[in-house]
Length: 469
Image 1 (tube, one colour):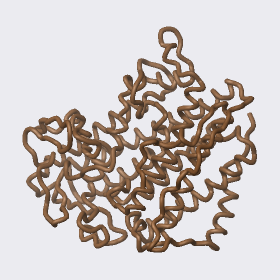
Image 2: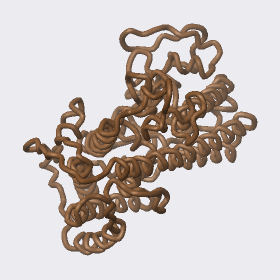
Image 3: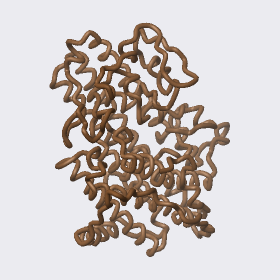
Image 4: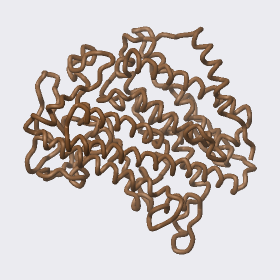
């Protein structure tokens, strides 16, 4: 298999990108609204390849090894978060609250890079077939957003009034808002109860997962009346400021602590199911998906094996859709072009800059066959021509420069929710250009797929239901 040092190429391109960024700093005029990049035409690549099936399986094995290691780390960090929450519940102090927040932030580091394994009919979010039946497609239980936080607990609304009628302050049956709702008995808050409530009545009715925990730890971080004035949490470097008294002196303090314990337990359980699918030995459902992906199942289980070309096509399309439609469009474009603090990913903790960086790092990991900066094995990118690799390296270097700018601003000057404000023209332009470059990177999966004998179009790497702006 032909291999080139794409990481070195990206590093070299980063130097050029950094130099160029000093020369040209485009600013979006206030009268001009950036628009989501339109694909002028659908590019069709006819697939031809000389790669053997063994070569293709070797790259799939790298992909599976990265998934296994990444999900293992995510479970470990989720369990650490659960331990920190348990300590806070036992003794709610400023110190234990901060420790729980810190553990949540660490847990997002490992989970953020796993998101690249979405959208490929894998165990995290398969919607039908034996994979969905076996592992449950629990992505919506783990990472649903944006959420309607006042379904969980109180918020301060646009009229500066404290809301009520939520899970925390309800005794007995709770009926979520929305359509086709089912009333749930919330007398005792358990993982099962939260599962019955999650997305009950609509996608925004989130009761479980990382962002439910985030809201409970940080509380509200936006002014629903006026995002620009922001009388709720003033300051470009201020996240949500839920008071400790919510967990100590308030009449519903014990209920909030019970909720936190239950949501942390459910999150660890759900994530552990997904991680088990990637184990390298088959034992019941554990390791079953990985073995099927690598066509290793025999006997009665052999029918579950995923045909090689099907597996590759699903993965390549999934990487493209995640980069182009999920990360670039739903997580970046919607927030910056609206602009809407509600639509930034981690809006309560102001950790969105890390979500973006980690989601991109996940893309980079699978393309380069790396994890934590170390080469894992043969990579999808290795089989492209030198010219094709150079083009992608240049694109990725520019993306990394723009993400670095977002991170620097978020840690020194202004969080992402201020970077997307229209008056901050330079940061808005940087984010909009990042969005466009990530969409271009998604389209590059058409080229990557060609090297493996897979024909994709730019439509195949675009979610037909992505938000139109």
